[in-house]
Length: 288
Image 1: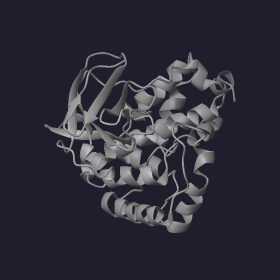
Image 2: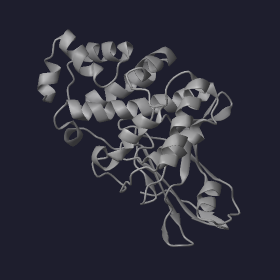
Image 3: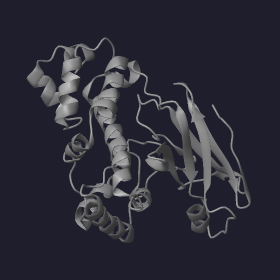
Image 4: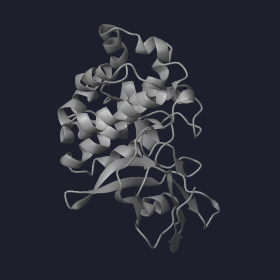
């Protein structure tokens, strides 16, 4: 439907349409209250501000129920057998998952559900089963009170993707940029550092807490550190690169088990946090 048609929907029809994007009743009701939107940008920004400012843990968990549970080998095999189709030719070329990876991912999904009490939520578009396994393995290490913030970020990434599908030309007419981007380059080989886990953290409750977990693609980048429309509040943040696992996967020994880059956000402009890494040193700077 067009943006104009969406603005004109009745409350019942708008509820049905928005429910396809996120099933949190709080989020849906606040979105309906905000209609009509003056522009696609306002719609996207309101979708974010409602989710982050007006919704809470119960609303997040309600939204998670809108996704199917993936915890058995058969469903995962079916999901990843067509990876290259549902990924829509995004950043990296995907290969079909092998059975060993599928079984490990199924086990991790069950462990996640047992530990946190809700299913593993991740924006899966463009990610292979191997990459998803790396992400869930990292997130299983989180405390229960911390993981909910990572999961709610992933939920909103999915919500934005579905809003783009719902409203014609939304991506063309709204600012879809992300506030924080990153990439890692292995200077010992001169090629991007593929499959490196990266965690974005904020200082909360007197500790560094995770808010986003990703893994670099073949270009050494993560395209969705944060959902489109989100702007971090002015503060200090840390981006942690798991260099230990990266070098182990390449049968190398690195001197630094991780690289934690602390940086300061002062405004809504774009922040690019790159890492140039080799087994015995690293460099960073504010990129563009």
